Image (cartoon, rainbow over all chains, first blue to last red; front, top):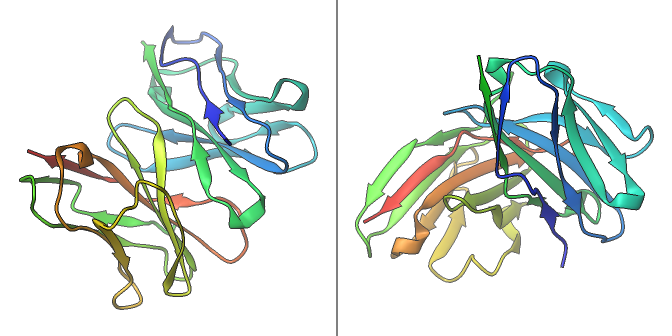
Length: 114
Length: 113
């Protein structure tokens, strides 16, 4: 079955630390990958997406993610986090093209200490 | 920036009662979705809706659930007889004809007591 896994449930970092959140997806043919962020009390916002082309994708707020096909991974990175990055981060995959439905990972809660 | 609006933000209901969760998708979007997240678990797909009919639904979306787009702007999720295990955050999403990702609402937290 198609699935997306996020192995870190809760990550705690100090400001200026580097961030990497893991995401793995299952094989299922064509897959488009996304990272969403949910700040406390707000809606899910798209951080970045990968459809094809350059496997290093840059998103908003200084985030980036790298699609590594051989590892079925799409990890999210940020070189230096800020307190305002405290949020929950969701990796999601869309299998089978635009007619499919997003499949989400379980989410990773990021807490950044000032 | 256009938004997907969900109301209410939090609803508490007694087991066995009917609830209707409301969503106003982005006005020119064509595809509509409901997802839910039980506390501590994954965000799960419930149903997708296009051209005034359900295009796909998950195993979770049983006969207790229904969706409707009654007036061309609202998109509602009805749970006919709520169970304790229906307690979750329910997210509505929409997208346009060209797929560029979904736009999500801020969610409705449903608590069944």
